[in-house]
Structure formats: structure tokens, C-alpha cells
Length: 76
Image (cartoon, rainbow, N blue to C red):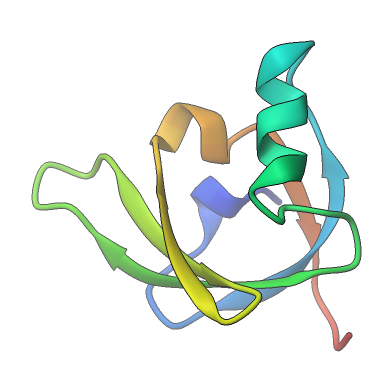
């Protein structure tokens, strides 16, 4: 399961952060770190981008990028 698979109101805990090089580092810099809970807040009318809540703030990312971050269900 990835962030892109979530429905509004669903949450999960980051298991792995994909991407390569600068993209992966950017994810980590934004707080998308394994073990962190994320919750899907909104989806744009055309389906892309999406807004997630992570570490107490809202973050908007592209759906393609959200598909590179795998989640696991459960509690942090």
C-alpha cells in the first residue's frame, strides 16, 4: 500500500521512502520518514495533487510521488 492508495480520512505509517537521489532526500526533508503517521486530507478535483497531514502540518504532493512512499497499517 502507498500514500496514493489511501482514501480521504485514512491513515497509515510510512514503511519505506522510495525515489532516487534528490527526490528521496526531498521526501525525507519534508518529514516523510519511516515510522511517521500520514493521513490523507484532500484530493484535488482532477485527482492530482493530494494533501496529506504529516507531523502536524499539511503537505501537498503529486500522486505520482505519493506512489513511491509505502505504508503499513497500524499505530505509531
